[in-house]
Length: 384
Image (tube, rainbow, N blue to C red):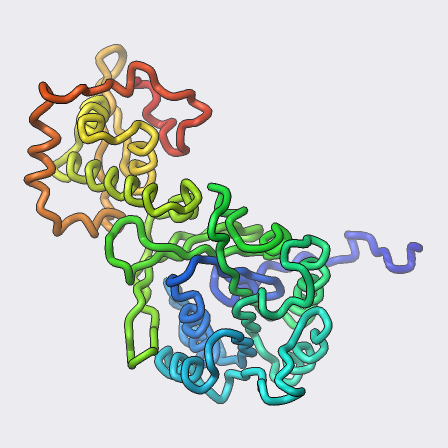
């Protein structure tokens, strides 16, 4: 029984290597999850193009040696969608390898049964990335069954380790689900459990632009990374490409809060608009911010979510009993840049006047239970 056991002292620790720094590790499975219309496949094409040409990954500066990619795409047609999208992304087509649907009677690859087909291709091509889009089309078993999912994916995890490559599986969100983004993916929780990194995409809550989205870390066992904003652009008819716009403060919970409902996203967006409106001319006392936000119908919990998302800072002025907490916008304007071009006069008039006609609750008299308070509000609790 001990023949296959070795002492940990016989192993040499090795650092994590990355296909995309802090987001997609080599030697492991990464998942990319999101709802319809988030351009998940276009992101996969964009990353494929960067691997095949050696161009830097988004928000990174270092280039890499060009490498081959195995792309299993079950939903987009190879000649009318996949190849034009790869061209739009700037890929080296000679280094992208697609499954020939016409072979074997048009039978799709199914895993774990066909893992040897992929392993042989990886070894011959020395590929650095395998994309399964979507993963649900390539599993031979019940997607809801944990044992079935593990049986299919563990061979991929072992393949990634043996060849030091990245496996990217694209997964859809449930139509309805829990607030926790970890549990929002369609199928068994085993998908996210086996992935060393989980990337979540959703509509950018900081703007009404339907073409603007956010990619954020949903789960990572290896590193942390900032969220990134991207925009979908049409290159040719039916061809969508990705423009990466930079970092944002939006987090995974902001993309799927209240079961990902559009209503909740709208409330958060409104609260961020109000908060920016109040602070755009300079810091204000935290109590005054809360009073005016309450006049605008913003709940305390939503206000603190907006504060965390915008990166609003708490600063203390004075000392002792005469001290007072103020809120101010962060120096980096990327989180609130989308609001700058709005006409704020009408909104400010609504916030600053008409209090006599409204019942204005004081959210600092009966504050919600601290256990329900969003993270990021502890730094200014003492002024309450």
